Length: 112
Length: 117
Image 1 (cartoon, rainbow over the protein chains, first blue to last red):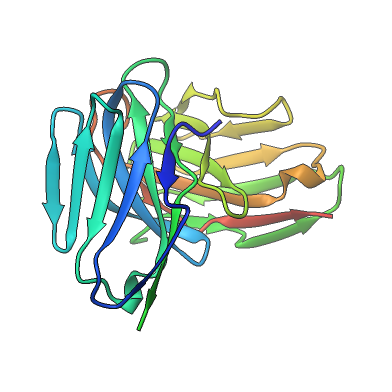
Image 2 (cartoon, rainbow over the protein chains, first blue to last red):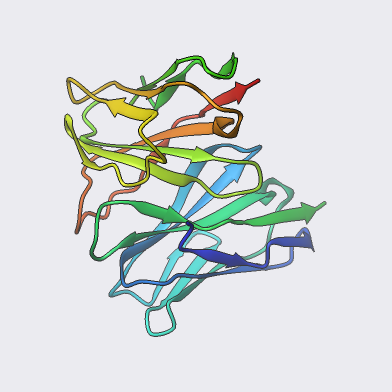
């Protein structure tokens, strides 16, 4: 079963607006990553945040991590139509195997 | 090649048949992962290889699924006696170093869309 859960499941915004997606997970983690997927194929890595980090930036992306609440958020600022995609969080558990667990994703639609 | 490649890109088979899906990871990447993804869902972990060995196969749904990586590079996912419920996109990913304490991103291939009729 999936460990991560994203919300919202779907998000529709206008170009130029900010998009915020949230992710919750269940067990202690080593790191958390965000991926983007276009057209149901081929995920692209966006950003990785370690369990001892609280915030990380990369271009228009800002990721936060709250390990006490077992949650993370991804903020995309000044969104563009090209940001339209599905976004997934993925976690590597601290113990118990080597699996990477993905959530069900947030489908973002940016209207031009 | 520059990225992870997977072949075939699409595979249509009949219920009960055997299929093999191939993954060519990025050269030099020791870690390799297989996932499957159903429509509207996130990737579901199947198996993780560190080098030639399967370090975690806990995601394989049953004994009809098997994967190998004999030389620590190319991997093949094998599905016996396919069922309609096996229909999904099968994704492969590789990373430079895997395992606990590593912070390497995974590079994904484009996937193989398997359809079992």
